Every structure is written in C-alpha cells, then in structure tokens.
Length: 362
Image (cartoon, rainbow, N blue to C red; front, top):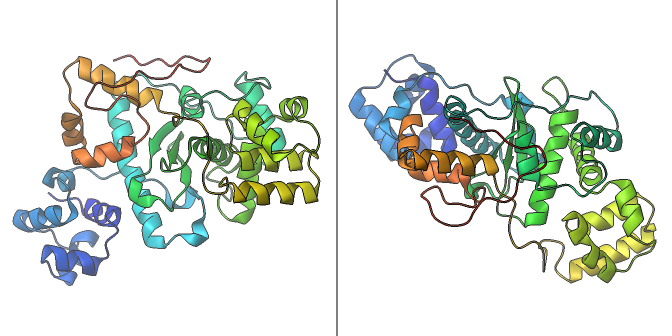
C-alpha cells in the first residue's frame, strides 16, 4: 500500500510541481493529485513509474507515515532570498535525514539533548549562559559540530543543490536538529553552527524563529558564543589594522569579517574604522571567501563513528540506504562534507572530541 504523504515528500525533495512530475512520469495530473491526497491509490506499475521519475526506491513509497520536520518551527537563513520551492525541497531533505537519525537512534546510544531554552534573554547573555552550562569558560570554542553533537544536537548536511540555503535548525519532538551548508568556508561553517544554536536556544517552536529580528539575534549570539567579550578584549588592541585582524582571526577560528564585526560591537573599532576595515577586507577577497583560512571543515564525530561501527559489523551504507528507503546517493548527500572518513571506508580519522565525550553503544 502506498503512503500518500511519501509521494508528496519525494516530489518536493526533487523540487518538482505536480505538473512537472506528471510530464516526467507519464501520469495524469488529476491522478497524481488524487494519489497525494489519498483519494485513490496508484497501481504498483504506476507507483514504479513515479518512483523512477523521482529517483526513489519503490519501497520508499510503501513505508509508514513520516514524522516530517515542522514547517512552522524552522529557522531559515536568508528566507526572503530563497524560493518557497527550494525551502520545501530543503525541508523534505531534512525529513529524510531525520528518518536516518531514527534508524541510527534505534541501534546506537546517542547523547541526550542538552540545549537550554532560555526564553528571551539578550543574545550576549544567552551565549554566556550556554557557555557556562557547557563548561566552556571564555576559551575559544572547540569544534562546533562536535560540540553540538556532544550536547545532543543531530547535525546533518544540506544537499549541494541547496547552496542558496545557508543553514537551518528545528526542534522535532524534543530533539534539536541542525542542517549545515557544506559549500562555504570552514570559518563560515562554524559561524552557521553557532548561529543555528542561537535559534535553538532563543527561538523555540513557541517563539518567532524567522525574520530579520530573529536573524540579528542569532547572529549576535553566534558572535558572542564564538568570540567571548573578555577574550577579544584581552587579545585585540583598539583600532587594530586589517593585517592584525587577519592574523588574529585564527585564535577563534572565525572569518576576518566576523572578527571585525565583533570588535566594532565591543567598541574596539570606531564606525569609520569598521567601515574602512570591511572595505579593505572585501577588496582582499574576504567578503565571500576566507583566504589562508582553516584547511578543513569541521566534521561530524557521531556520523563517522556510526558508519565505522556499522562497517566493522559488515553493514554497508547501501544496506542502510535500502532500509530507510532512499538511494545511496541520497544518503551520501546527508553526510556530504560532515564525515572525515567516507561512508564506504578508508581515509582519515575523526578529529579529536570536545571535552564532553560522546557515547555510542550498539
């Protein structure tokens, strides 16, 4: 029996309208509409044509109802610049990643969520409270992906085709999820992770999590979380030149632009010095890239350990993909750029863990 909502989700994952799927699968528009609403059920041969058109295994459409990511609870980056179709596609991809998480959660003991919901404190205070709760002091933040995972956040990547979606975060049944764009510089990836943490902490499902105001708050949270005021004030001189900023940004593993913004926010740069520094950094290529930045993106420790453990037991990624009803390519896109060891084996070892150790027990 076909589950109607799975047809809808697969279609949105591919960014297709009903009309586009109708043309590609050779199924009438009215029939597809009836299938998605559950008014009628397709024959198996028809489902096979739909599955082929959407590049999903036939078994996917015969699975149970999916626990989709809540549309109203997602914090989108640059929402005004991104089409609704792209956002629907990214949300559908996130739902598939959550399906993978459910599969993993049944077989491994993952860290319990430890992300506080702090109501409406100012971002600077919120960042300090989370740092204190996580025993970080004022030291530069460690690997942000590891840090989120150690505190129960499920971190996945956005598929490469969603390059115009920076990142997003969402609570799903009490579990926090963060989805990161892995096509950006490593420093901007760290900032995105801290930004989404800010949304999780300050903008729960019962509070406004999108819009310019919420984005500014999450940006300010990320800035304060990655670059504690006392740390920046202790390292950076007032009126620092661009070369000093570029040299110092590696202390906090942030972009030169982010450090410049933080210094202005803390009163270390005047308005004129801030604008001048931004102009010079832009002229040097620091607006869109990070020359001479971190060599590697921060990667997932949980996903790396999970697939290493599965491989040791003879379970290949293809078998995992088949069990959750997606293609191997779909599975890889969930992990793109987040595992240092490829899911098929070989390669590098995972980076060192943050202070709070992870526990994965099969």
